[in-house]
Image (cartoon, rainbow, N blue to C red; front, side, top):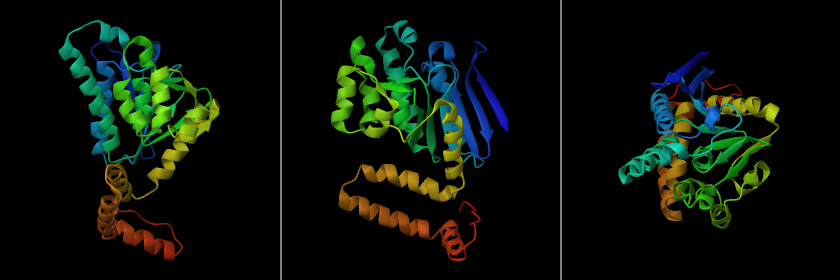
Amino acid sequence: MNAVALEIDTGAPLLLRDDQDSVATLTLNRPEARNALSRDLMEALQTQLDAIAGDGTVKAVIIGGSGAAFCAGHDLKEIRSNDRREIFEALFTQCSNLMTSIVRLPKPVIARVHGIATAAGCQLVASCDLAVASTEAHFATPGVNLGLFCSTPMVAVSRAVGSKQTMEMLLTGTAIDAERARELGLINRVVPPEALNTDTRQLAANIASKSPLTVKIGKAAFYRQLEMDLDGAYAYTSEVMTENMMAADAREGIDAFMQKREPLWKGK
């Protein structure tokens, strides 16, 4: 077990990292602000994701929040502290880069959601590969209520949820509960609050038990083929499967299945 607290100049641990059994858990740690995504918190999260990308000991990632909420979105006090256009451009570029880093990370990322996940917090959930939420979690893109449409959160949410349902969330700003979020495809599972940590870790452990090379290949191919037409997607994934079949882990996995034994993954 390896626990790391990342400290910014104020000395406050904005992000906590805990590594156990090949799973890295990153916990947003601004409970007094409902884990709002300040520039410093996004920088800390980006730094850890970049480090994890090349860390062979980590096979899956969990992102959660401390305190009463998962993430309340951008830090509105920070946003209103400076009205210069270049500041806004840098902020939303930073957030967009963070979200795409999650999608492009060569390890699966699971959101562990409790309390609220609103605006950029909902975007963070939608950007993760999988999401487990407690029954008391709520999700919303409420920017329209503040005169600031959730345009960047829309990118991630619209790729996880159908267009009509996404537009309803965006145009009304109304929160949905965890069960409705599961029905819409925003999250995978809904569990009692007391089971949230255990169930999320079990899901991460299941994924971490697979060949890391195979998971890396599969995650990258999944997102790339979504942007292709049908014929292009089949041509691309056929080539991916051919390359995958040439890997030692594919041969080992098939042999282990036929020999009725557990595979010994080598990650190559």
